Image 1 (tube, rainbow over the protein chains, first blue to last red):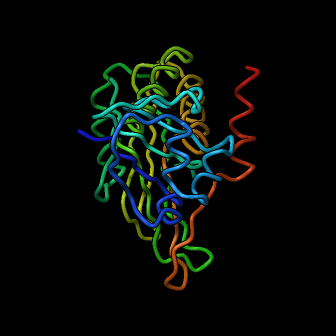
Image 2 (image 1 turned 45 degrees about the vertical axis):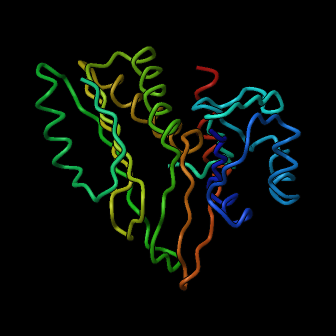
Length: 80
Length: 149
């Protein structure tokens, strides 16, 4: 079992991939270290959200993903 | 009657609205908004990305708010994802109610929230190149006007 990280919208361009699988568990510091400096910088912007296991985190720095979870990195939305 | 959907293929708004109207017998009025892809600025195509676990649940959450806030009989909220061409419908919101005010306000509320809160990422192709789009300041202002009501 692993954790899947999904990059949405412009973050996928920045990461150069749409998703990646990593070994769990994973916290906020671990995530920042994994995604590369450009994506890490974006993740620290207020309007960029993180979802874990289908829920948008109220406090993304409290991320605590375990094996089998999917983490989604959500840049500011464009609207419908 | 509540019908909330994401569609991956082109749709004909009139067909959806006809079915929606029939599904709400006894209604006093229907208000409908249809958004289409603009062709201005040399836009060749528009692509909408969503994230399955939160986009549709988010639209259902918006529908819950709308039913709590307005006196409605029914709500139709349909949104496209994938690639679209100029002139194609991208969103259709229709509200049915006994009296006009509920339906008109519900549609405006839905659209203002969809434009700046819904989980969609949009990019447009101009001169063969894709460009990501962010929510406009006007869209945030349109949303803010509901805060004090």
